[in-house]
Image (cartoon, rainbow, N blue to C red):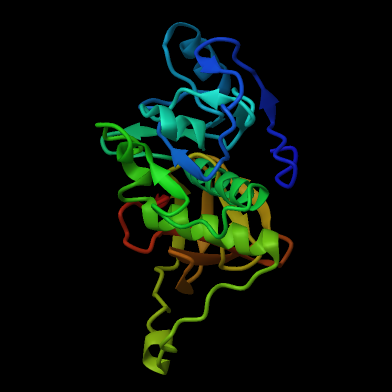
Length: 267
């Protein structure tokens, strides 16, 4: 994204067909998330939607690159429900696997960041599932958005909320019941010190174990990293740690907290 604050996408490939100019006076009050059912780029979506009667405002590719295909001020044909189309922004996400459906770490991070930016820009409030962020399946009979409403939902929404908090300068809501010392300690996990191979596309490295940590590097599928024994659970993810050649300590997400998929495997 060239600018999260101003919603300037990496690329603009604006459709002139299979969308509707304007919003008939309606206000944007929600975001609807989708998955491609395949691994498409922004150009791939643009080409498909030349002949298919569908469209969405944004596409998040497997490398995290974001393309705008319908201007926010116009109506994309994405939800299967006309009233929902008039009042929503549609965000598509590329899949990196089909059995099961799964989006990459880069897609998850930038998709969630885009959701946060949209929520901020349109005054929708902190991203909340089925409050201002909805699955496509809520509006028509479909399994879309697959993992974003399933195995990766907790991680996706935790990431969106963390980005929103960071963008607005807000702090996360304080729990009604403060965690006990034992509950806090349970966030620590043991990681087997070893060399691991990245098993996903675009795995971000951060300067602290949090989705709000600064991204300092990105590993590609097949690259290796030497983790030490330290680990923790935060922001919906299990985090590991390593020391970079510069001597700086770096953190990397190993898996969602529910361990539904692992981003690294033993080399």
